[in-house]
Length: 165
Image (cartoon, rainbow, N blue to C red; front, side, top):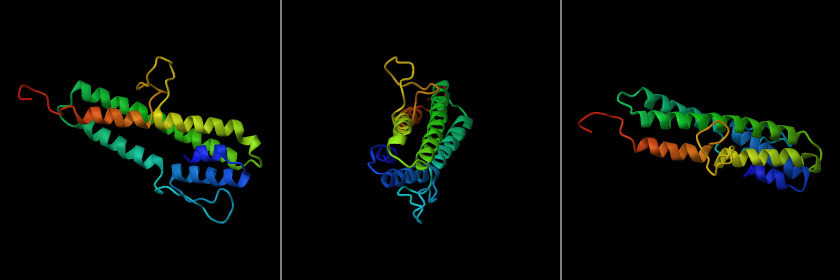
């Protein structure tokens, strides 16, 4: 949301405020990037990385659990791909926002703002990079929404295999 607000800002101060918010939300910091005397973070002050790390830790635990099926492991790997994509997009967004916050005009930031907003949309919804009509668990495609989808698939798969199941 804040990446998009920076993109539509009509003043440099408004753009820089939302650049700072975006960077701090993603990094979990309260750094004063816009030099107004207050490092602002309207988010949870944890950063996106910590949540991705927690999901990855749960994946590691599920992957090492005895009796995991091939379907379970396939969905675990799908989520891992989406986490990797999310990390790349988060870095791109933060880098773009830092680049914009150094600019002295909204007009000079248009291309960077578009790139950041596009990356934010891909982070959330994924991106159909191969133009086949669906977002799949491939590098450069799946995002946070797909982590949720594949996570739900994992939760519906039995961790035990055998004649009794």
